[in-house]
Each structure stands twice: as structure tokens, then as C-alpha cells.
Image 1 (tube, rainbow, N blue to C red):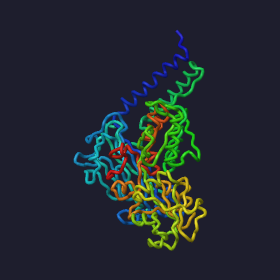
Image 2 (cartoon, rainbow, N blue to C red; image 1 turned 90 degrees about the vertical axis):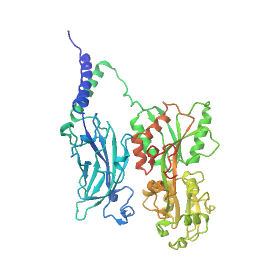
Image 3 (cartoon, helix red, strand yellow; image 1 turned 135 degrees about the vertical axis):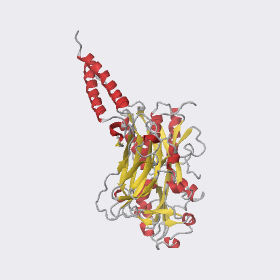
Image 4 (cartoon, rainbow, N blue to C red; image 1 turned 90 degrees about the horizontal axis):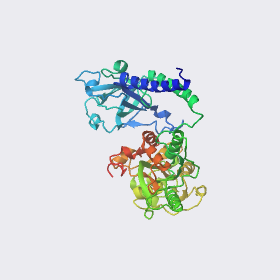
Length: 517
């Protein structure tokens, strides 16, 4: 009896994945302890610092200037299919340390655990916990119990050791092992998705070849299926200009992941929170959707909650956002008290010399009414007060010799205007301000714009970034799919990269507010 090439390809197509699964999950995947270096960068190399900018290079720790600070983010994970317990670590029973990470050429000045799987107990990482400490250039981590696929992330701030002159730092040296683990049990670097060993990758490559051969015999053609959680259609985004960098990057990555999804963005896609809410309400009204049905093709993002009067716009907190005051360098100030800020916006302080700055008139550059950044400034910082009247409709017309105020439509335009106008003071999302070399961020009562400062109630200029839908979008709609994407690991990484904190990482994610609020 002859066997056709198509039948043979089908048999191989079944045999290869079975062999791969047996190897990976039965023979090779017993116990695996893995790590990834997700970030290792010096402050001087930060995209937020230009060649003439030294703001981030003057980083301090406990009041001491750091010589050459750097930041490292490591992910420790159970990459096997069996749980790891304290007895699995290759270390004496009386030694609480399970993993040691050395940084040649650098000393550790501080560390924290920024993320952990829900089943990883937080007690492993509290100050003073056994095995959780730093000594010189070494970080010690305890024998953390890790279920299958569980992980935690360690963020470390380091400084160049005196006498170490190499321009580039060696990679961190991670030392650990598990009893009975794969290939000697030593901890291994894992890829972004800790799945396949080298042998399995060869098997999977063979499977691809077999599948291609089978397709040539059995199919005339066909489209590649998108991932299961992908949606199709066109999604229109609008709203906050402060959150626009996150949305632009997330939209690009989502389209790459889901080829049949389209998210068109233009220079006018994000015109402000209030404009976005109005556009969403109008689109929903035009669609004439009955109660109980939602619009699945639009999302609007707002810096803070909507006003009353739009009952069909439903909120979903996405991130905690930080804002900052920004000033032209010639103002000669870097710190203002809360009272001084309010006096400036009340119009009683009109020259920087009145707050111990240079003798330069103050020019206020504000966002247009309806901006979430401006509304947050008025509510959180100015105690409900507003700025003085506009003195010119065009910021280029500000009189250099006397104080004045103008308004602009976007965060980017505001930052450019402050940078070009001596004595100018404005307000911006922190990530955009940090990336603009020609403006200076202002501390409030001595506190910089940090998530820790907001958490402790010291820094007042923050807001919850909220995604709004018109009604409840269908579960299979592109709006619902994009919201799930933002809440997933990749989406959360994008949110963090722009200086925001995902709501899911806070104690009360549905409220998405600092712990003291």
C-alpha cells in the first residue's frame, strides 16, 4: 500500500508536536529557574538626556551625588512546569539566600521589587527579610517559593565603582541553582516567553517545514490566523494629549500583533480630554444605539473623570499619571512652595524675582479649557482656582517686558512654547517634560514629580487616566480587545515606559489612586 506525500506530512505533523511536548514538559521541563535582564542603562544614556543636559546625571542617593548612576531591571521566574520551594535551591539549609546577583564595576545603592505574581508572598521582600539585602556590588534574594510560571521583578539603582574605567559595564552575574533541575540546575537566561529549549526549537522548526509541506498538498491557499485574543476592524482613539504617547505606541504594537486591526492616528487625533469625551458622545448618538448596546469602534482617554451629563459614557481606569510644572531655564527657579504656585496663578506674583528667581516677568503658558492636564492643575494644585485672564491669543505675541498669559492646544506645543519664551511657566505630563531638553521641571514644596511622592501624599499634581466607552462595547469588538491589551503584560510595559503606573499594580485598581488618597 502506498502512502501519499500528503498523508506522510500529516503523520509527521502530528508526531513532531507530540515529540516536542514530551521533551519540553516531561523530559526537559522539570525544574527551571530563569532570569531576564529587561533593562540595564546608565542615566547618561537615557533618551531623556541630551548631550548638554545634566539634570538626570546629577542623581542623588541619600543626599550624595552618584558618580555614574545606572538602573537595572531583572525578572526572576520559574520557567519550568514544577513549583520551586525553599528546599529546591542549591544552598545550605541555614543560608536564607537563594540567588545572588553581582554587578562587576558597580555598587548597589538601592533596590526594590516592582512587580510580583499574585501567588508570590510579599513577605519575602519586606525590609529586613532574611536573604533580601545588598552588599557592595551584590544583591541577595531569598529562597522565594515560585509556582509554575510565577515571577517577580527587581529594580536596582547602581553607581560606578571608584577605579572602574571601562566605558561599558559587564552584564550582571546571576548565581543560583535548583536541585534536580534541567542541565545541572543552574539558573538560565530565558527569552521573552520562557517556553522552548534549543532542542525543541529544532523540533518546532521541523514542524514548520512539515506544516508548509502539508499545506502545499492540501490547501490551495489561505490567510494566517491572528492570535486568539486579536480583534478585527477599525478603532478610533481620541482624548488626552498627555496620554497620547502611550496610545500611539500601543496602537502600533497592537496592529503588529493583530494584522486585521486598524487604528488610524493623525496629528489631530488627540485634542484634549473634554474634546475627546464630546466626540465619543456624538459618535454614540449618531449610531443611535439602544440601551444595553455599546459602541465597539471608539475609545476616549481622559485625564480624570468626566463631568456630569453624559450617562452613557462608561469609565475604566487605566493608569495613574503624573504631571509637572515646567519653566524656561532663565527663570532661575527649580522649587516653588504650593503657596507660591497659587500666588503666581492668582496673578499676585508676576516676576520671578519675587520668589527668589531672576528678574524676569512671568509668562503663563496654559492648555486650552477642557484639557485634563489643566483641569487637574486647577483641582489638585490651585485648590479650585483658575489662571488669570489671557493677555494674547497668540503666544508669540507675549510682551517680553511684562507678564502675560496665553493658551495652546497640546502638550507638545506647550513645551515648545515654554522653551522658546523667557520667563515662561507651563504644565505637562512628566514623560513628555523629561524628554524635552529645553525646559526645567519644578519641584513643589521640595518634592519632585515621582510616583513615590504621590503615594506618600507629598506630591499633589497627579491624576487617574481613564478610558471611556460609549455603553458597554461587545466583548469581541476592537475597543474591548484594545482595552484588554493595555491591561496585559505588553500594554503595562508600554504604560510604565512613559512614566505612568498601570492601575492593576495599585492596591485598589478600580479607584486607581495613590495609597494615601
